[in-house]
Image (cartoon, rainbow over the protein chains, first blue to last red):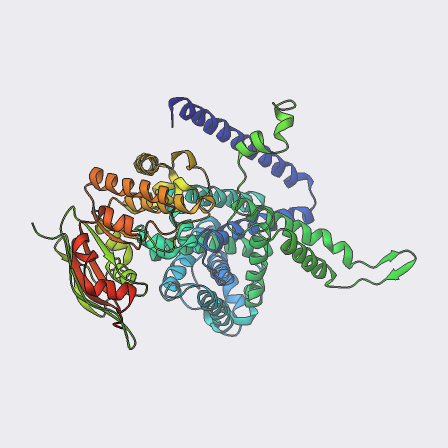
Amino acid sequence: MNQESRKSAHTHRWRNRLLTLVSLGVFALYLLWAEHNASDYVIRILNNTAIFVTLAVSYNLINGITGQLSLGPNAFIAIGAYTSALLTLSPAEKQLSFIIEPIIWPLSVIQIPFIWTLVAAGIVTAFFAFLMGFPVFRVRGDYLAIVTLGFGEVVRAVANNLQTITNGPLGLKGLRAYTNLWWSWGFAVFTVAVVVRLIKSSFGLAMKATRENEVAAEAMGVNAFRINMLAFTLSAFFQGVAGGLLAHLITTISPTLFTFFFTFNLLTIIVAGGLGSTTGAVIGSVLFSFGGEWLRAVEEPMEIFGLDIPGVPGMRMVIFSIILIFLMIFARRGIMGRNEFSWDWLLERSPLSRVFRGGGK
Amino acid sequence: MSSLLSITKLTKEFGGLTAVNEFSLELLPGELVGLIGPNGAGKTTVFNMITGNLVPTRGTIVFAGNPINGEKSHRITARGIARTFQNIRLFTDLTVLENVMVSCHFRVRSSFLSAILGLPGYQREAKTGEETSWELLDVVGLTHLGREKAGSLPYGQQRRLEIARALATRPKVILLDEPAAGMNPAETESLIELIRRIRREYGLTVLLIEHDMTVVMGICERLKVLDYGHTIAEGTPEEIQNNERVIQAYLGERRLA
């Protein structure tokens, strides 16, 4: 690279950082406005979206970037949710909830502030993922998918039966709704920032190399096991914290919440957004959360050309599936493929850039 | 002079099939040795054992005084043995530059946390890696294609990129698996030039599998011939050219009328 292009790359970097900060500021203002003016319903969707962004972006790190088809995020979300919930409930509340068998000591007496329960949720979940990683990364491909799927089911089954810790099928109720727009979006932005920076580093490059060709990556000195483990554990950390946020958003958790269906939704999001693209994961989450709500309209009873059509519950899932099928036919690599959003692209190569340049050169 | 890579009675059995039988080789520093033989002779299996893709059934591999058989592939690369692949194994969806930069990752000492935070220590290492990679692209003549996807390169350039990628691991020994396969005569000529050049500039020891006799006879100082896993001949290119057993292995037995 010559001096000139290096200098322009430098100014571009600062321009891009500034643009990112400004956009985040505008978004924060929107959240501030929404907090006071939007309906509870909209706020709920916004919170949901943020949690799905966190989950999808971190799930994409292991599935899309590192290329290991893990099917166990429901387990990580569950571990995070339970860890966080058990630590925010007061001793008295816990005594009241655990009616079949009392909760074990020391969980029965611990109560710590919300933020520390989230940290704990992340660390505990990451630790579980780390232990899981040893058997998981002995296999690859379909086998890895099945092993992680199995772990997901094991965690759910344990949550169902470990009466003295999880309260079994009764679950944990009466959690305080600590999760607000600032928590959920703050952590979503933090996750995206960390994941994007990691992907852009040489660690991210090693992850992609492992995805493209593991034998060659190893031959170029990449320790594939360590790099897989890093992606897996880090991904689990974020999913654990998101689990904690989710628990304190819906205020009631039970094992039925964390079935494979949860993982399936996340997989849909990242595949539709474009496997391997963080931008795609974000777009997928937004479309999924908002789309799911907009499509509720089709379940209402309606009148078309004088025909009365009764409301069909589940109709939106049918439409959702049809959209997915079309996506797979016409955009097989998802909305974004493996491309990422960048300011350079928006200002210099996108259709919009003509507007910015006043008609273009 | 003591040998850099010393292989003794290396054997690989797949069930009842002996792919490589008691293969021995002493590779002196700076040498350029060719490994030839008909298809299925076990040449690539030898490479796979040296680089840790396959665990030898018997035998020892000693590199720079340390036994390395059974070690993981990435550990062996870190010790200083790099390779290219016969069936090209580039990271097709990464750019040409990124393909080379991957090979610089294992030398990064900073943790992933300092990479995320962009601490000066990591940034220095990342910058070194990128600069090294541009330099190596220049060596193999692919600088102008640095930002292209590796998968979009024509065949001959993909082979050159494989060499750049292997060089980025800063090897002492480089194993080239049919580097001229699928190249036209002009590309082969410039490949020979490239191999000579990297060997001179980086003081490399080269072990080469090749079918193209222009390459083999042009640059190899010493040859070893494998057939059905057995070493059937070794010597200078001239000696090999006139060796009865080699001619037999390649062309079949001469039938006396």
